[in-house]
Amino acid sequence: MTSPAETPAVGPSAAARTALDLTADLPLPALEDLYRDLHRHPELSAREHRTAGVLAGRLREAGYETAEGVGGTGGPGVVGVLRNGDGPTVLLRGDMDALPVTEETGLPYASENPGVMHACGHDLHVTWLTGAAGALAAGRDTWSGTLLVVGQPAEETGTGAAAMVADGLYERFPRPDVLLAQHAAPGPAGLYAHTPGLIMSASTDVDIVVHGVGGHGSRPEATVDPVVTAAYIVTRLQSVVSREIAARESAVLTVGRIEAGTRHNIIPAEARISLNLRTQSAEVRERMLASIRRIAAGECAAAGCPREPSVTVSGSFPVTVNDADTDRRVAAVHGEVFGAGTVLDFGPVMGSEDFPFLAEGGAGGKLPYAYWFVTSTPAEVWNAAAAEAGDDLLEQLAAVPSNHSPHFAPDLATVGPGVRTLVSGALEMFAG
Image (cartoon, rainbow, N blue to C red; front, side, top):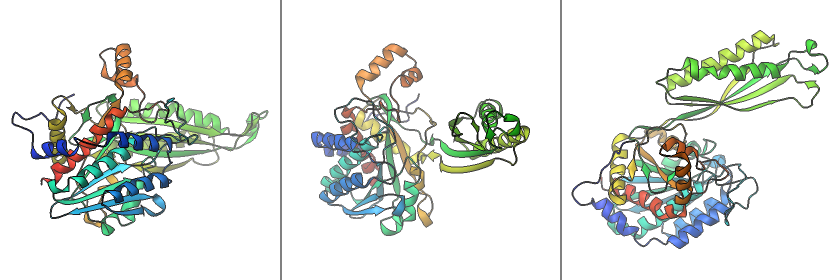
């Protein structure tokens, strides 16, 4: 781990001083209540109507021109615009959707929507965004420019950001000069992870259908069993990363689902396999896709399947690559605001985001952005993990609930700091 930003020997910058002033008296009890309310009422991707309404209402109260339903059928996106004289246009984004996860935290404000949970921290993201929007509106005499606040739907499915752009985000509202976003992450609360370049990986979903010949379980010789063939494919796929990708490259291949059959004594006519790939370069992604197609076709041919397998590439997320200068500036102001040793560079991770689709910018070309992580594991949870795992950071991280875990529960102590990160980052961008 290295630090991309150190607190200068001279006093803090104007952006850092102003951020501390604007966030000195945050309405923390009200923001924590907002977080609890959002956590109790999670909504799946493209169905975030209640969450969007709550955010839109808070933006209107703070004086923003506010629009709802941005994204069409891709989800109920929210846009708030605060015009405050000449200067840059800065976009702050928070995603709103929850996951199909049954909560097991035991929290008094646990999900009241069965089978749905804010297991990735997007309720915290909306809370941070709301607090930052309010603080920047209240302190508008300290900055000049246009602030664009975006509540994005359907991040988990990778469709929300693109849907908002397709629905005229940058034609209907001011086109930003820079975009900022952040994400709750496991780790001892109080750290801010920046990487000036590649920070998150691409994700690609692949579906394989194995076509066999079905029949009675008592007469396998009269069939071509797609279950056995699918099993061979799954086993062979485990060699793609270990034997076909160079050790210097980062890649993950996960078989997340395999489905076939209806009864114990029926050999089905087909089997379905669902995969997910994580890659950090287009070349590795294409190499892995070619390997998957080759392996699936080869195993089906060896089994005597009546036709070749169907291999379909479906949902995908792009790599997230920070604009180096923008990220260094934001990291530097975060170092000033929070102190030495709080801003770290963990390097790129294998998780994925659809935030870069917002940066495509429609017809105007790609926009610069900075994206960072806010660690959010409660101190008592982290300390217990550290006591068990020792000094190995990766072992410690593996021992605490991660994003998408039914036990994921960010520390409410991060509500204020998460607002402060957005406010200070925006003020640094408004400084030109």
